Amino acid sequence: MFRSFFLYLSASSRTRKTLMALPFARRVARRFVAGETLDDAIGVVRRLNEKGILVTLDHLGENVHTEADTLRAVQDYLELLDRIASTGVKANVSLKLTQLGLDIAEELCIANMRRILERAQQHGNFVRIDMEGSPYTERTLRIFRTLRGEYGFKNVGVVIQAYLYRSEQDMRELASEGANVRLCKGAYMEPPDIAFPRKADVDRNYVKLMQIFLDEPARARGAYVALATHDEKMIVAAQEFAAKQNIPRGQIEFQMLYGVRPERQEQLAAEGYRMRVYVPYGSEWYPYFMRRLAERPANVWFLLRYLFA
Ligand SMILES: Cc1cc2nc3c(=O)[nH]c(=O)nc-3n(C[C@H](O)[C@H](O)[C@H](O)COP(=O)(O)OP(=O)(O)OC[C@H]3O[C@@H](n4cnc5c(N)ncnc54)[C@H](O)[C@@H]3O)c2cc1C
Image 1 (cartoon, protein in one colour):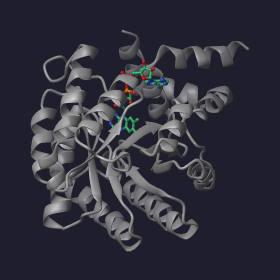
Image 2 (cartoon, helix red, strand yellow):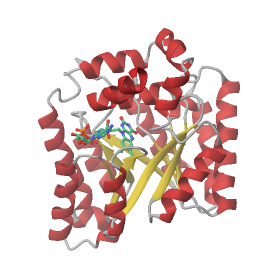
Image 3 (cartoon, helix red, strand yellow):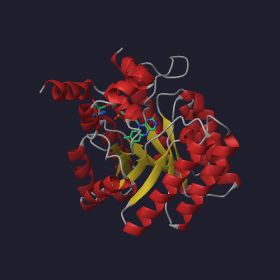
Image 4 (cartoon, helix red, strand yellow):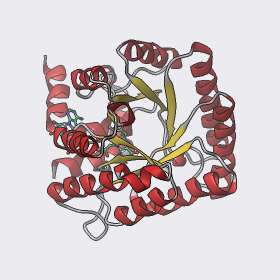
């Protein structure tokens, strides 16, 4: 109920307008968003890198509706990749296909992605395609495979959400293709005919899906999984499975969001695991911020405390 309410608000343009105009909301959003400019973002990356933490940078934006806006988004990502290279910070890039024209035309989206991936390739960098709501799952996976198969890009990865029933089949296929996948639980509102409604089932599926990728045959084919979760139970399950399989800690990648469990992020990095933090920046912070509120009542109390303090 709580989760559905905030996910509903994340798509409401009226609430978006109201909240984005409130200075206090912008300040609270800074807990989860590095800032509005690339300079803000690079500053945060440097601070995380100093603690042995890697970063993936997301220039916020989604559901863009004109070709001109998609070209601006491409420009932003090219500039971001150049800046990562010129500053030498340890960061790759995450993006959403609806920012690059998926709602307009698949060909446009692919052409935009090719430009970004070519620049990333020149700099020896990597780009992760975030996974959005279920209307985009099939198309996102198709574009990912076109970029890898038809255009030969090896520096692109995708995301799978453990709450979808289809994900087990997707993970098995992606493992056999030697793909690079970020595994998360899933952040959107999905109906029970396509997604597990109970958290316990999502958690069970998450562990099952992680094991498909951490298993020896998948690793032998070059498959790589980054485990995106703040859930201690998932982290421990991964550590135990990896230890049983004799996978060195440096080959296990955990990912968390900027502003969520920062002490645990530092601890995992200090213990020798690869720790990558997802750092979003930019002026389009509203839907991202609402999804974070939907995840956890404590984050809403944080917002209210700020309001009434
Ligand atoms: C790096 C990264 C990338 C992601 N990319 C995508 C994507 O492409 N597509 C997509 O649909 N989703 C994405 N997500 C979001 C993800 O799907 C979940 O919505 C989110 O991570 C919460 O799930 P969880 O695994 O942390 O566990 P949950 O079951 O939500 O939480 C388990 C426990 O973790 C802690 N916790 C969880 N969230 C918070 C929080 N916000 N603040 C404080 N503590 C918290 C709490 O202790 C909680 O009890 C991403 C998440 C991460 C970390």
